[in-house]
Image (cartoon, rainbow over the protein chains, first blue to last red):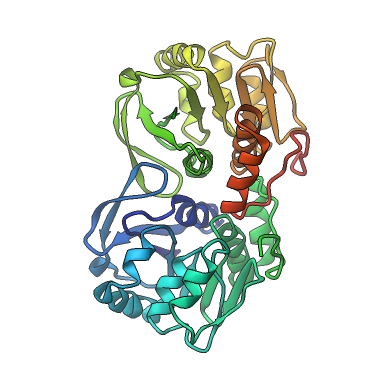
Length: 195
Length: 195
């Protein structure tokens, strides 16, 4: 059973994290989904609730890392301690999936330098200004470069995660999950009506 | 600012509740979103985390009620105390939005008797057996009958909520939110590729 580590912080966008989490929760083999933040404890999010987390220092397995976006990323791009810890986590994880402005955080680690990535279209100027050494691709539902998956805004994270399941498990596995979610998925990474 | 009361219970499906919550959170006027359960405290959900709730007895405004689905509904349809309290809440609320198997719970209150409603396609036989006096409509993304909105499985709740915003605020308001979510919405209630 794969471990899915979701990195949270105050003011993350709930659906960025919980859309992919629901996809992983519906995999046939199941996933061990865990929630972390730098200090542990309850973190705030876009839907006016708090989510319990463990401390990132407690992460003992590093299969799949999910980094959501949200208003909270605006502060964190300038937080050197957070970015340094994220860099260690991301480089040691087997796969890294960023949703929405989560890719702004990952870009600050330098791990996306010279790689292709995408992000939220409403925050495009801000995100891409965080690191000019990333090959930012605007017209994309999601982008894959090696072990790094990055998606456009919010619900694009659901398509990216289904795409990830299709790539790493089987395309039928992704279809089954989309059917359970009654989700009309977009299989084409380059589909982008919001660009 | 509208109050959105989300009724939770152990083993609810996270995306059923948090998809609509994210839509309401993105409204221009904002919404006061609150989370309740019968006993209050932390409740479990499909994505392997717990969500903090207040006691339903503490609900002091009854604008919009959201009832998610999930495995937890299987127990609750037989829980007379829960159903009686839900009936009071639903009848006193201005609008009631059920996602997925949440409509099984609402059907047990009798409030859907003689009304049109829909539900999850994977659990169709079970849901519709809960109350034969509901006019169950299988082929639908969502169904509206008076103040009662019911949707198909999981992500259909996002389309229903956008449809609700379109009906009660303005269709441009729904479009703006879908754009922020980068969600390719289905505006047609009768669209149903999962039927």
